[in-house]
Image 1: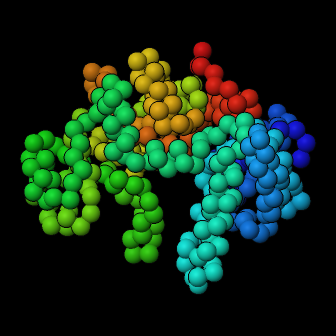
Image 2: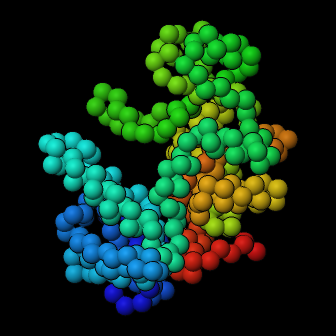
Image 3: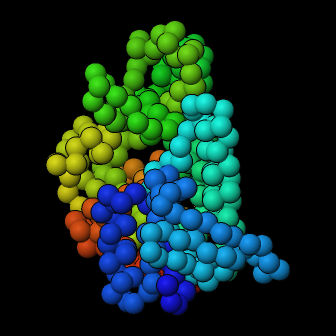
Length: 320
C-alpha cells in the first residue's frame, strides 16, 4: 500500500467508521480496515521487527499490506474483542499471546497518532476517574455516592432526589433479548440488601431543562442541545422523541474538556451534560469512544470532517 496509511480497527459492520473511511478515500489517503478480534491470526499476518526508531515490518490482511513504520494514524473504533481465555490450555495461551503481541505492536507504532490509544480508552472508561477529573477541572458535578452498603444508599436517597446508573454500559440481556440499563430514579424505600452484591453508583438528580452532548475531536468541540419529553431522565431511552439543535459550548467548559482529554491521553471524547434552567452545564459522564454519527445528521455538526482531518494530518486544530 503506497503512501502513509491510516489503520481503522473496527468491526466490518460499523456504519460510523464507514463515514470516515469514505472521506479518507475521497481525500486519497490510504486506508486499511482491520478487525483484530476477527482477522488475527487468520487471514491477517504480522511480521514486526524492532529498530532504533521503533517497530517496523508489515501487517498483511488478505492481499493488502501496510508498512508498520509508515502508519500515520490508528483509528480505534469498535473492533470485536480478541478471543477469550477459554478452551484448552494451548488455546488459552495462544489467545493471550495474540492480544499482547498484536495489540502491543499496534499500540507502539512510531510517529502514529492514535484516535484514541486503546489503553487510554480503557483507563478513561472508569466513571470514578471521570468524575474526579471533571471536578478538578472546575465543572459542576452532581453529588455522587458509590457504595455496596444499603444503609449508605438509603441515607443518600433521603437527602435529595436520586438516580441510579450503571458504572459500565456493558451488554445485558432480559429474557434473551439485549437491553440497555438506563439511568433511573430510585427512592430510599426501593433500596434493599441486593445493593450489597456489587458496587452501585447513586447520583443527585439534576433538575434539567435539556441535555447536551459535546463531541470533542482533538481540540475541536461540537455541541448539540438535546430536548426530550417532560419527565424523561435518560434521553437514550427515547431516541424517537428527541429534538436537536447545535449550540456553542461555553468557553470555560470547552477549556476543561480539552484538558480532560489531554489528562487521559485521548484525542476523542463524547461528553454528556444536564443543563438547568439557569444555563449551568452539569457534567454527567464521558464516553471515550462514544457514538456520534447520528448527531452529525440531526444537528448538522461536521464531525466526520474533523475526525478525518486529525487522522490525515495528525495535528490538532482549534475550532474557529
